[in-house]
Amino acid sequence: MLRFNTYASLNAFAAGVAGLLYAVSFVVLQNNLWSAIFLLLGGLLAIPVMVALFHKLRDVELHFALTFLILGILGAAGAMLHGAYDLANVINPPIWAISDLPSGIDPRGFLTFGVMGAAILKISWLLGRGDIFSRNFRVLGYVSGALLLIIYLARLIVLDPANPILLYPVLLEGFVVNPLWYLWLGYLLMRG
Image (cartoon, rainbow, N blue to C red; front, side, top):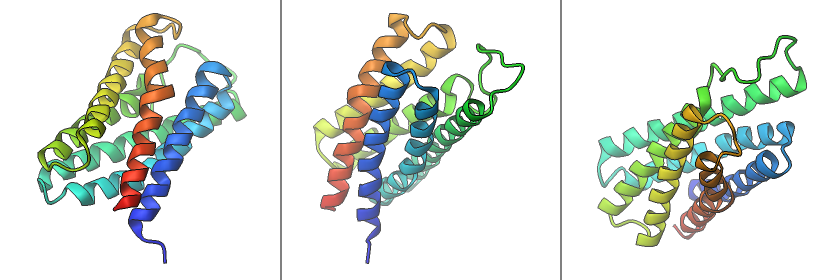
């Protein structure tokens, strides 16, 4: 019988891979179909991971843990909706498409980057209060949360993805920090 921790761990591993594949398809390949699919999958895979983290942190401070759980699920749902929106537009492009118009579901990545960044920052802070997992893992979480917030804020101001203000945080978060955070978390959850 599959235990939930194992299930969440496998989801964390898969979310790390999906995050890396999203970065590759979005930045390197510039393939809208695959980037939409991996964004959608990454959000779907993140939900059980957030629930597993809530279970670990609820005894540290229940109300803070519940707050980050809600934020984490909103961020994951935002990624799923954003990916589904992009996927629908790739499969059946609208006749009157306006390329710079933000998504009504997740404008400029508010949920995907902004809310998820806030959730990961809160998770890292609460992990520290409970002395759960290693200090290095918590620091990586702080870096990931901060980069996600920077990406969201940069997307509000800078529309050109090649602009270094947006490009460098995207490269660091997408290719290194976010996949590493999920893969490491998958390992930690697997250990129990």
